[in-house]
Image (tube, rainbow, N blue to C red; front, side, top):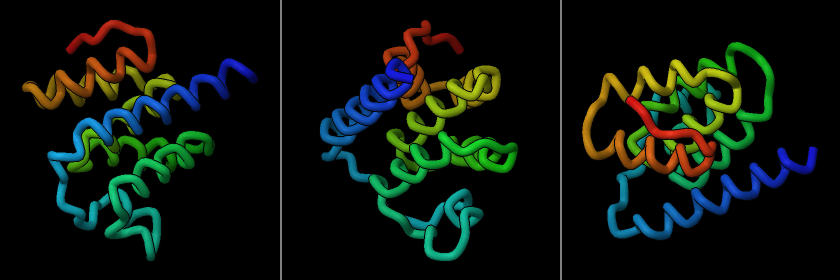
Amino acid sequence: MIPAVVAVVVAIALVAVILASRSSRRVPVEPTSWTGQAGEGFEGLSEAARCDMIFAIAELPGADRTAMLREALDDPSEAVVLAAANALTARGEDAVVQTYFAARPGARSERIARDLSLLTGATASF
């Protein structure tokens, strides 16, 4: 139980650092398809609110929650994608995350994979 709490705290801290370091590259806030699936009132959430939503969804069981996390991989914000990839990895969906990176080669995927490897302790590969 304590290692899980520590892992969540570290993940939140890392996402906060990433958000702070990338504040100069603001992603425009726009409705995303995955937040629309969550229900009325979630469309148009800020980047921070979408990350909070990922952290909440990550703790909930169910295939529909896993599907929502998969959809969040297409979010325009790197921080949200990182949070979703971390949550999916914790759910044992590593193959989904690796397939996402492989289908989208480039600097963005490399940054997210590198940051994910810091969170999970795994080596980034795609």
